[in-house]
Each structure stands twice: as C-alpha cells, then as structure tokens.
View 1 (cartoon, rainbow, N blue to C red):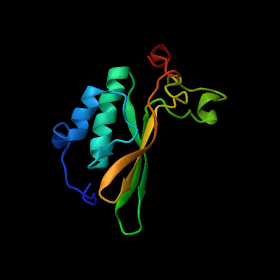
View 2 (view 1 turned 90 degrees about the vertical axis):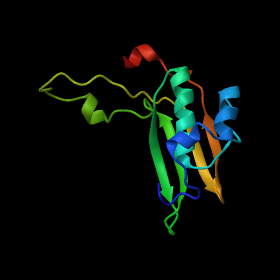
View 3 (view 1 turned 45 degrees about the vertical axis):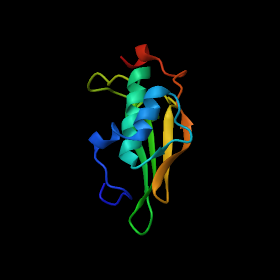
Length: 134
C-alpha cells in the first residue's frame, strides 16, 4: 500500500521486533504495534495457520486525506451464505458446500499516528470445526 505511514515489504515483517515478540508468545495480539497493516496481516495469518484456520482481509477504512486508518482480518469461515443461495427452489446443479458458519476469530488494527495497533482481538477458535469445512 503506497499510502501507509511507513514503507515496508512482506519480507521485512519477518525481521521486525513485533514478529520476534509474536514468535515468543503466539497468542499475544492485544497491545501489539505494527509498522504496516500488511505486517499485522502476516503475523495474524501465521497464528491462524498454527491454530488451524485461514484468514481473509475484511474491512478497510481510508481517511478522507487518502491514508488507511483501519483494517480488519477475519477467519475465512466468518459470515454466512445468503439465504437465497441455500434454499434454491429448483437446483440446476449440485450446490456448493457451505464453508461459512459465523466463526468469530478476528483482529482489528487501527492506525494511530505512526504505528498500527490492535484494537479488538478474538483469537480463539472454539466455534471453528475443521470437519464442517472440509
């Protein structure tokens, strides 16, 4: 993202102090600070892989001056399929498997001045059932 406060590439995320702190304690997302939203995504994605779920980018808010100010990353199973897709009157083909079931695993990062800090974090997978996805 070219409008981020500090330029950094994905490879730099693995070298950062935040990444090193994450390696020591993989569940500590509250009060972490990141140089970019991409760094936050990289670290949360690593955590998600270790626990057993995938992550997708959800909310992206931009200040009127063009600078990104908020980003939310959620479990790939967050949300639900639209009702019209679940209850088709005459299916012409076999419906796709349901892969979304309102998983609540998420992390929200806000840009405050120079750093991106976590604002909300729910990093549990108690609602996540791998067998219902595969």
